[in-house]
Image (tube, rainbow, N blue to C red; front, side):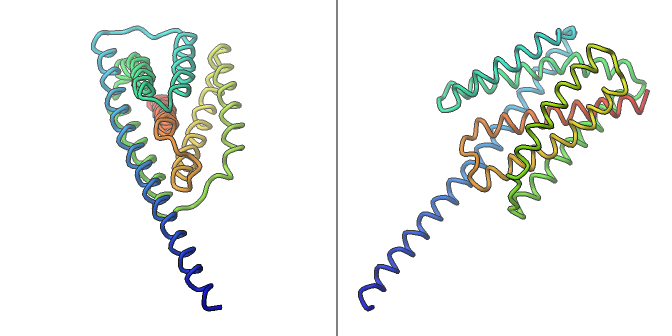
Length: 229
């Protein structure tokens, strides 16, 4: 029995070291993700501002979808290299540019357009910060939402296409509500994945959170726009 105690101590020390290493890696992942997310949001805002000032027209839905999925695929392939950072900024910059004409529309079409846009921005920030803070402090595991979110996003995306091509306002409103709920769930899920080790790549974590924020903002903007017509 006497010679087993040191082995037990060594095992405990090794376990503690591994746990500390994992905690440091998790903290580094979260820190890098939020830094990159902040930079990409700022860059996206800059490209949106450029599109607004230059009076850029609305892009075709096929250009938007092609650009988004093409750059998303490129980022996924480059996620483990320095070029992945370039691709992230290309993707978020492109999405910001597509948002510029949308913002111009709301600012000019509504009498209280600036208030609607600012309310959508504030609401998006409040939702994101509160949901992220909840997961980071409670450390709840939301991995069980994976299947539901995957299915829900596909259904909502197809419904959005149907609402667009068949000009169905009621369905469009329903889709905006669906996306708000799904993107809120995606923020919970992705933050949980970072906390519990389900996601170890900060580039992919950034992209997921950016997409959630982007869709959350546009959905909230749409709902507020309809309410203030």
